[in-house]
Picture 1 (cartoon, helix red, strand yellow):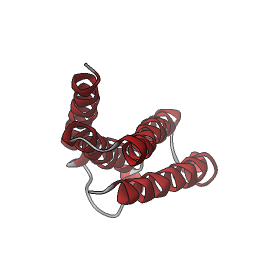
Picture 2 (cartoon, rainbow, N blue to C red):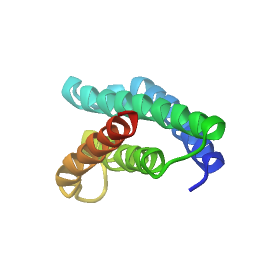
Picture 3 (cartoon, rainbow, N blue to C red):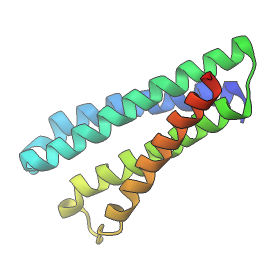
Length: 127
């Protein structure tokens, strides 16, 4: 995966985080409990943080060259966004969905592990 694609994916993820945050605050709030809103907000928060990291990594790699650790770190963070934040979005609104969403619960920790692995790759590369 090249840096240009990583930049585009980070931009898309950032735009989605803004849109999903606004949707949660304005569209979903009347339909969800405070606990469900807190789950939604946690998903947005983690998506934003890791989107910024992917953006910084892509920009860094454009200027200084890519290493396998940087690329894998960015890919793991994108995967973490999809699995961690994505499953939290589903869990927050599962009572509104027309299908069962219990499957999303076990996916959340896998996304968290992707985040941790991505950060650890950055640590290894920084040493």
